[in-house]
Length: 388
Image (cartoon, rainbow, N blue to C red; front, side, top):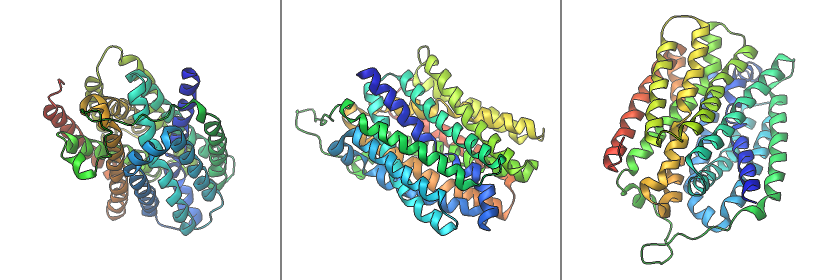
């Protein structure tokens, strides 16, 4: 039963990744078909992020009441509905309206699943499960690219992904008996622990640092994924359909890196792997910054994904150890909210800056975010007195 549940969770992580990279890979075609502006991708991204922030902040209470299994099934169903809406949309307003259930469905499942895995499985499973997210995120642009190359529209690409999500929803509903009922956390005196408020969470030493690190991490990842295709089209004159496929290279880097990271967790601890990820990202950004041509830029995108690979799963997995299992769901919920605030603000901000200046700012923008992220994480280790 445990093995079967793990397989279901793997599928759930694939479902998390499938839609995440679609907007960036399809946006050059959507801009043309909808006759809208390049920066409007930031509006959709911001709407989705706002919904995820709201649902992530409610995840502690919702998971205590419904359990991780039900939250996962409901959230994937909402995402499937939103993607179907995109498949029948022919105006920016319709896309914006369907972005609302898309965002609300994403936050709770992210927080609930990550906490469930952090509490019940080892660090290597956390990495391999997030590798499944990477598979979903990599497959999404490939499907979209194939549809566009084959003469289809971006609506057709979204329809295919929505049907996959509907099938995953049915699997999750059938799996509900496999999920253990949530056990209410208790305080030191044995009384049921209440859900922490945001001010209470922020007063925990190290909480601000981990929240800012998550803000920066997802800001960098989302900026890299959302604007990769546009960067290749505008700076390196790559065709829109070809750029959609190349944009998937970033997510392929994440996927391959998380598969490898699962094995590295047997030799290195979470902190060591996080710092290795920062170093790889820095080298990748340097490769993109140097005027070496299209091919090195694409290789740089792969390496950024490879460097991102260990950061997210290792920080999540270390959260119960850093802050205690009794507070992990609350901490991870706010971590998710902080991460999505980064997605809400930073990719749209880059769109505005790129419109005003040039998409050549793309690697410089990510470099600044990476420096802030690494500094915040190292401060977290110092506050929690954790060896680096």
